[in-house]
Image 1 (tube, rainbow, N blue to C red):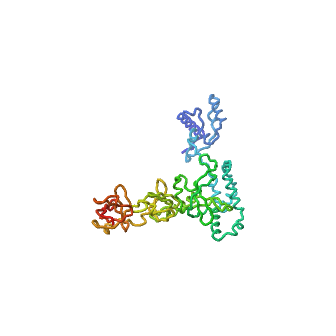
Image 2: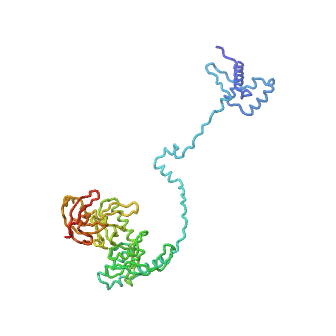
Image 3: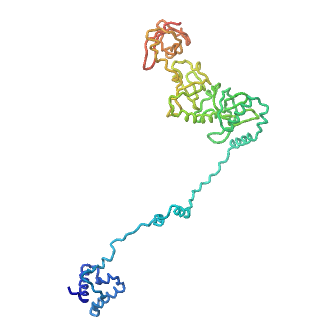
Length: 439
């Protein structure tokens, strides 16, 4: 095939350029493809071409077209339009983390550690704490601090020189309770009326008040517990209950020591707080465990027990299976008992205990021991609403009625009678009988 001449190649290029311009309405001035390929087209040249396009007869197509080398048939021509040189979209690369650079990853662990150490440390600014004004001390706090300072500057070796071993042991226990807040146990000897400087809960000011206080004398030292330090907060008792505490065994913590006056001031309320924490830790999840308790006060129908630092009022049903006319005949202050722990009350948060459940119910098996129709000896233990409670020797209580030929004035509490078993009430666990005679 014969080689094309230079004029033929230029003519073909012009024809192709005109066809491209017709297809693309955006391009008003045709631009040679070879100029786009070679990258020789500049803004100045394009302006000149626009100016020269107005006078086409002055400038020939060959002069305005750059020279192109001869192209062989084996090499196809590259045809690109002016629009094809404009990218349709651009790729935005994310900022690369300097720590993920190839140089950082190629470093050994020792070098990377050294690089981290060489980096400047960022200063962390901590928030400043707001300065709070110091609360002024009250007169009671100043007086307590003064007495405590006097206690530590006292020469106890000189004061305790002539004490007997029993007196020295008593004072050593008081000193230890004052310094370490340890718990002491003592029996209430009496109730006195004393004047103290106390803090008024309504006004917050200190004032002199004459109040009752418990007196505990273990050997020779008089320990005073003011009425404000006897009961826990929100559990205050009437004045007659405070007077009934004589003979009860209680725990207390020494608050102040008057070595020269041979007396001390203590708090039962503080000891109760310590006992309650210990009781919860020991018996928190041990439902059914047996716990020790003490009788604080005893009345005809109710008793006040202390168990684990909690003051728990109990009735006859909580204390005994049998009917008791007057609880004071069986229970007295200071008496130590054992009870079954049944959990904590969701309403009050106090432990629920039962003294009577320590022993089995005497009603169990009573039908075998005392069958219906038998006669048994019993003692009248109480009277209520026309009914007479009679207790047999094994602790079983019977609810009895008089026979037709007997009157209530003929029988008194404590009399021994002969009864006749009539029937059993399994649901209420009661035994019914009739009094036949006074035995």
